[in-house]
Image 1: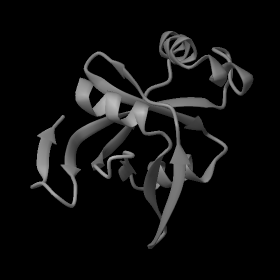
Image 2 (image 1 turned 180 degrees about the vertical axis):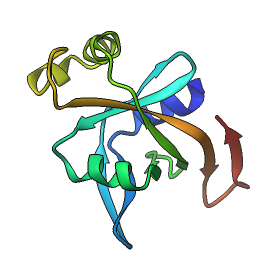
Image 3 (image 1 turned 60 degrees about the vertical axis):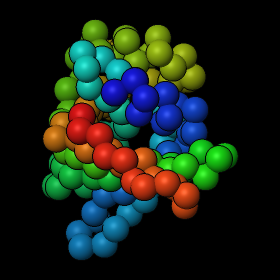
Image 4 (image 1 turned 90 degrees about the horizontal axis):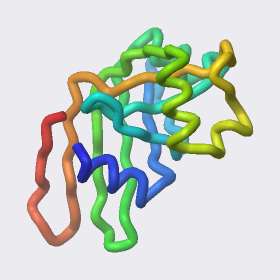
Length: 131
């Protein structure tokens, strides 16, 4: 878990892919945190990604390091936006305070469930990790 979290944090932005109907949609993300052994992300419930994950909660994300090692992480988004979790996210990423607050009704958090990750490169065999 820590290896994946650190890789994402050190190689932001990472790109999250969802489905918009039957078409893929990819966008950059920069926030990820660990809480109770899960990877957490945030968004606004006014954005397309929120609607897309409500319709189909499965997503995949990817990013690459300067050393050309990349990661793919996939799983299911489970939304849970309590004031305590919002506070933890705002503490973990103070830049979020420019966009959201604990009392904000559009600030949504979701964690990765049923997660799998794969580390890949052009020179080594892929390595899979269950989350």
